Length: 134
Image 1 (tube, rainbow, N blue to C red):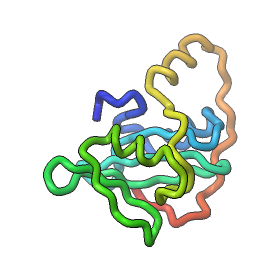
Image 2 (tube, rainbow, N blue to C red):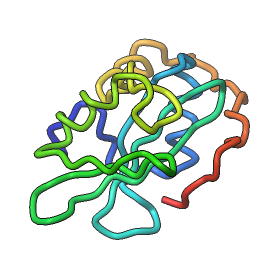
Image 3 (cartoon, rainbow, N blue to C red):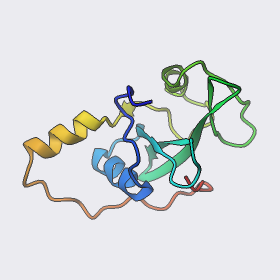
């Protein structure tokens, strides 16, 4: 997981929401550790100023799956890159396709080159979809 450029490790849910709000573009996404479920990750994606969170975990050995909207057929992937590629397309069970990765380097470089950057107090609105505690 650490090799993924959009993997932010053990950041909090609220920090992920802040980073995605700063990105400000529908389809911006990142991956982080779950706060509530051990050995589980979360994909967080921005859509219509809301952050939608989906659990991402390993099953049956080394296969990966993502939690999706009810009624969407479960799909298994050999690695997380393949999973992300599949969810870059519409109608895959997420609120918005995964279009714009918010990378760790991108975040670090932005704040390094813009030291006087003021944080916006604009937080994403609460999700209209059932939120999953990650």
